[in-house]
Image (cartoon, rainbow, N blue to C red):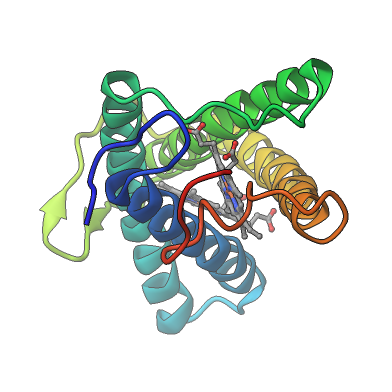
Length: 185
Ligand code: HEM
Ligand code: HEM
């Protein structure tokens, strides 16, 4: 198994980060919505502890992923892809990275400005950075909710782009990111 990226291939570490974080984020989008819709009950509170705990785990994984990304340049785009498309993909990926920070951080902001104490996985007390404030937590909730919708939209476009490369352009962009996939030529 090759851990590092090379000129035309994603390494095992970058692939693992991509798929683990993608699965966790898709789960989180569902869990956040279910927890939000649930009637006030002990179950709702438990769903939110899971939601917040998985959310801070994602934040930690994204920090590690970015550190790995900075020390490990990604493979180049295949020559068949025009420059404008490569630029568009770069902008899309940058937006995804930005949202992978902004979404959990704004979630933390909601949690930190409510009166409900939060221990990640019922074990680790999280630092209390801001005073509880109803107006602030409502605002934070609105921002968090709006950013999750933007994230979902960008992810849907991202998936559509990956499928287009595979089924219409017949290049290796999708297969080289799959766990069993190889180089891009
Ligand atoms: C990638 C990570 C995350 C995703 C994708 C995500 C997604 C969501 C979604 C879809 C909702 C429902 C929004 C709505 O229906 O308006 C939600 C609500 C919420 N999330 Fe997250 N979330 C993430 C991380 C976090 C984190 C790290 C925390 C706290 C530490 C958190 C705390 C909350 C809270 C408190 C709400 C309820 C907001 C309200 O009452 O208005 N989330 N989240
Ligand atoms: C929540 C879900 C997802 C997120 C947040 C996400 C995020 C990202 C990011 C940030 C990159 C750029 C990696 C880098 O340059 O370091 C990337 C690459 C990629 N993603 Fe996703 N992704 C998600 C789901 C998916 C899914 C479901 C597919 C397949 C259908 C997919 C296919 C790809 C492919 C093929 C690449 C490589 C593009 C290239 O080689 O230039 N992603 N993804």
